[in-house]
Image (cartoon, rainbow, N blue to C red; front, side, top):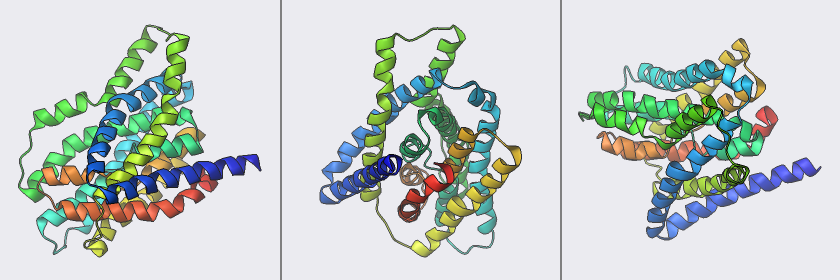
Length: 308
C-alpha cells in the first residue's frame, strides 16, 4: 500500500510541475526568459553533475552493455528518420513541412522527460543509460540536421559549428570526466559525493517545470492532422520495433526498461528552435511536439505496469 501511495505522490508531483510550468508560460512571456535560464542551468550544471555521480556508481552490467546501448540509441533515431522518409516519398506537402516532419520523427526528447521518469520508475541506476542516449542524440542531430536543412530548407549549415556543439555538450564532458576518474581510480570525497547525489531530486523538479514552460511557450495545434504522421512514427512504430529488438537480444532488466522508455518519448521541444534555424516549418514542428507530449502524458501512469 505504501508503495502505491508513494507512486501516486510522485506522479501527482510530475503532472503538477508540468502544469505549473505550462500555466506560468501562458500568463506572461517573461516566464520564457526564466525557462531559458532554467534550461541553461540544467544542461550546463545539474545534468552533468547527475551524469557524473551516476557514472561513478554505475554497475558492471551496464558497462558491459555499453556498445549495445549506443547501437540501440542510434537505431531508435535512424528508424524514425528512415520510416518517415519512406512515408514522405509521395507526399504533396511543401519541402519545408516535409523536412519538419522528418526532423521531428528523428529527434527524441531524450533528457527532460526521461530523467524524471527514470528516477521515478527505475531509480538513479538508470541515469547512465539516459546520458549515453542523449549523447547519441546530440551527435546524430549534428550529423543529420544539416543534411535535412540543406535538402528541405535550402539552408547550408556549418559542420565545424555542429561538431563543436557536440564536443562541448556538457553531459558528454561529464562522461569524459567520469571515464578519467574511473581510469585512474580517483574517488570523490564523501562530502562532494553526497552533494552530487542531491542533484537527482533537484534536476527532476526543475526539468519537469522546464518541460511545462517550453511546451506552453511553443504551444501549437496548427495542422495537427499532418503532425500526427510524425507522431505515429516517433511514438508508436519506432517503440514497437525497439521493444521487439530488445526482446530478441535480451539485455539486463534496467537497460531494457530505460531504452523502452526512451524510445516512447515524443519529439524534443528544442526541435522547434532547430527547425527554425534550418529554415524548416517550425510551426508544424511545434505542433508535433505539443500533440506528441499531450498524447504521452495520459499514458505515463500506466508505464509502471510495463517498466516500473
